[in-house]
Length: 283
Ligand SMILES: [Zn+2]
Image 1: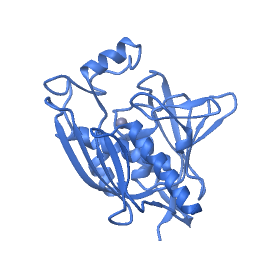
Image 2 (image 1 turned 90 degrees about the vertical axis):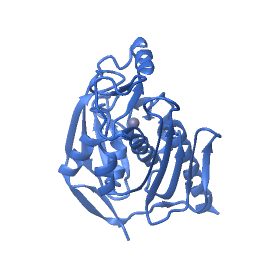
Image 3 (image 1 turned 180 degrees about the vertical axis):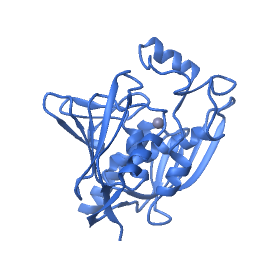
Image 4 (image 1 turned 30 degrees about the vertical axis):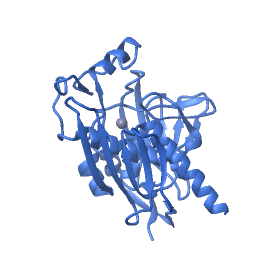
């Protein structure tokens, strides 16, 4: 039976928030069994604990934000993806600003830090949410669904379709585990179109982000940058999905299929899974 895991010692990652442009330092700390993943905003007058659950999610454009007691932590998905990808169940994430560091747009720096900390096994079994019947959210064009697992863990099939253009249609099927996460997903960077970048800038957002720090696509390809994989975009979408599924509060054992799904739909699936598992548990 798999045992809950945390990290062996504290490690930190520093950078700048993509949206706010503010410098930030994040510290990952070991946590006891049964406590899950929790952010702590240490810059508040008294530290605010923000557990990683669907109930603490707040709706935001193109990222996943959490809040408790009116205090937010923004763009949590890449760090959460790294934790889930490496199989870390319990961790306290202390942060001294409102937004996680954007770094290179991937989760690689988080993975490197967590690997440096090392894994510690805790004295309690993992209680995964095992999907018993197919659960689907979305509409005809954008959707995500979770079906019963094909093995004791998470597998993902993702399709993105940006129509004609350099991103085009990309698909990826992957069995998510620490090794595949490190080698196939962690370094995949977030991406936006040149138009989106312009809109963000004119709204006063992402001002500190340059094109070599973020994959920006024009109609020919990435601007001033080279791809790490030809299908880097779909890999990043899977990275995001793995991060968003941590909102369930425990590992999800399922086969997840997604088509043009983003943070909002991913979170809707997480909510539905939590609600369904609650009904089953009390049935
Ligand atoms: Zn992302």
